[in-house]
Image (cartoon, rainbow, N blue to C red; front, side):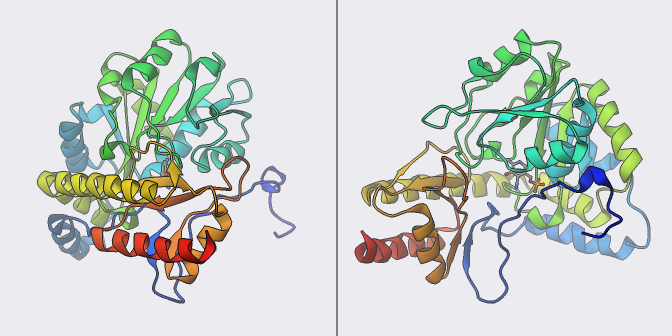
Length: 353
Ligand code: PMP
C-alpha cells in the first residue's frame, strides 16, 4: 500500500478469486466455470465483431438488450447489461445501501457481498444460516437492503420463488436483490416478479450456464425506475462496460438456446450422478441446485481432502472460514472429469480413511 491511498480504502480486504494455476494442468473444479465451450454461434459472432474493435461499443447494447429481454420475458427497458454480474451487484450496493440502509445477507454466502459493502463504505449485517445451512427469512430484520444468492453459494441450496416473494411483498419499503448466478441448474427464477414489485432487482450472468465466464457478461432485471438508477451509476463509471466482442457473443449465445439447454441438462445429470457416487463413499452434502456440490466426509478434514486432491491434479475450492472449513465446494465438470474425480477420491479414501 502506498502512502497516497485514500484512508477510505486502507482497511479494504479484497475478494480472493479461486486459483487459476499455470504451473501444472489441473482438472479445474474450483471456480464454477462450465466444462463446455461457449456456443459455436457465440464464438463466430465474437470473431466477426473483432474486426470492429476500433469503434467503441454501443453503450446501450441495444441489440443484446432486446435479445435478452425477449429471452427473460421482460422489456428492454427492464434490463441492464454489465461486465459480469459482479458489476451489477456492485452498482446495487452503491445505489441501494448507505449509512442508514445497511446491506443484509447471510453469514455464509457469496464472499463478494462483504467486499462490495466495504468498498461502498456502508454497514452490513450478516444473518446466520440455520444449522443445516438454510436461509431462514423469518430471522431477517425488516430494514436494510437484502441480498440473497438463489441458489446460495457455496451451499447450492435454493429458496422457492414463493418464499422470496413473501419477503418482497411484506417489505415494500426495502430493496431485495436476488442473485441468480446459478439459477439455470434447477432453481426457479424470480424475474417474472419484477412486473409486480418495484422493490426487486434480479441479477444474472452468462458466466456459468452459458459458458462465458471469460467474456464478462452479466445483467440485472427490474422495474424501469431501478434500471434507470443503475444506468445512472453505469454512465458515471464506464458507459462502455460491455465490450463489442462480448456483446456479440451474448447475442450468439441467446440465439443458440438448444445448446444452452442441453448443457444445463448435462450438468444437472452429472451433478446428480456425482452426488450419488459421493454419498456411496460416505460423504454428506447440501441439496445443491447449482453447478457445484458442497461436500464433507466425517473421517477426512476439509483441508486434508483439498490438499490430497490438489496433489492428484484436481483443484476444488476450500474455504478456511468458520462453520464451513470441513467442506469443499466441487464444481461439476464433464462426465470424464467427474469420473476421474470419483476415482481419485476412492484412491484418497483408501489411504486416509
Ligand atoms: N454471484 C455469485 C453467487 C457467484 O458465485 C458469482 C461468481 N463468482 C457471481 C455472482 C459473479 O459472477 P460473474 O461476475 O462472473 O457474473
